Length: 283
Length: 292
Image (cartoon, rainbow over all chains, first blue to last red; front, side, top):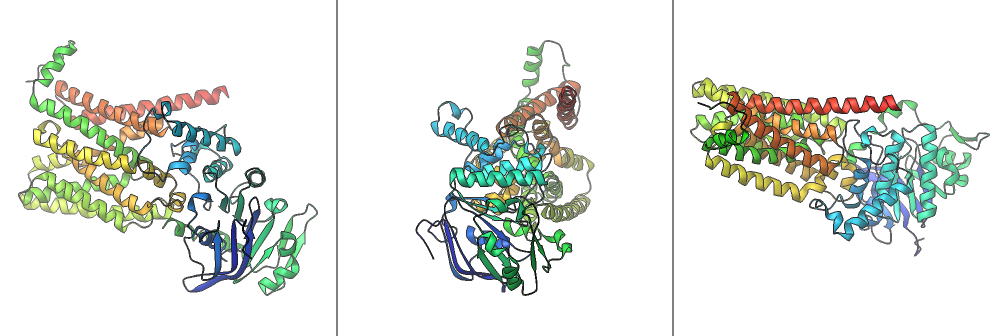
């Protein structure tokens, strides 16, 4: 299953948290420039997939290889966008500074004042930040305090932050969550453009497949323990999902191509608790 | 005994600086403004003003205990401020920057603060309840700064500022964006603890001069003012320090010539700066909205 040019490959991978098996039997290979979505109902461990790929959580079984190494070993070449976080409206830091921290925020020390004059490295860093902000189309508001930017604008800046080190793999945890529909479409198109232009592989956890459906190369659909992966058209079908859920589920296709899953055991009331695991990431 | 203010500035300054205590106050003021400015800027950015305030309050029983036991008040300020900073840092969950974590740690901080105040009252009572020392603990003694005080102050300021320079960029990352910082290998929790300890040391030093209650004039106000004026981190930090030195030195001069308490003059100047900055920003914003 592992191929030489694969950005990441999972083979029969499983994960358990606190002794509970979240999912197992996941096979997935992602090549440069591919756009893969991790789908499934709430609480099945979609974000856990990202943690496994980052190396913050070990796989319980199977093999996981990220950029040819064990997870966590290739940190420099992975861009990571955690589950949505809003910046406080009163936070007085510019978007460009937040992007900049993605480049050198993990270094010790402080930048020297006026080093722009004599340091070529500093000028190159400035140039890279400008370039990546340009790439995500955030130049117009990158110099405003980030707390004053809209949700979509903040998300673009955060994607720029994740991209600033030219990663080969981008891990996005629900980047479309809590954005309005036009912004969802805009960000989805942006992520697709980044895949193609920069040949970055993208693994994106998504709650709703529809905004990204037309861009996807492959999906992983996780449901209570089991998982299926493959092209969206093969996985998001009545047959596959019925098999995964173990109860009759129907996939309907609307006239505009949007997919609707009917009959899944997902209770809407669970929505409020979707980010109950968010604090885990901060530990 | 003060000669009174004449409009001959040079003579005024010569008069003022002919007193060793005034010279020491100006030196101490410079060190304190630098220290409180840099640490305070991060404190305001990290929304840890309440933690800083409580740490300052615990300095009050610390000083009371130390004086009661016959030790120097400085030692008391230090022991209690750094101790309570550690307590808050260790007991608070996570990075302390998420909404839930902030709610948890603010309750915790309030508990520490309330207990500290009660302790302070007990020890003052044991000590004999001299009102003059209470007032020194709470409102400080800027003009009583000795040469030894200045030396300690400079040493502590240097140590804390060097530490801040080393962790500066990582601390900024961990403050603004803890989730990504963790993924990038920044030790967010360790930095959180270290910062609170540095804050404790700063508060202890500044408290000696400004007292437990007025620490805030120098810790919060210059930083808050600068953050109203600009969103560039470097400029904002520089502005904080400049404002801190400005309000401290002018506050001292005002206190000297006007026979006022330094706490009042420094705080008033800092407050005036904040109000002006805020007004300027509001005017600019409404102007921009009016044009657009």
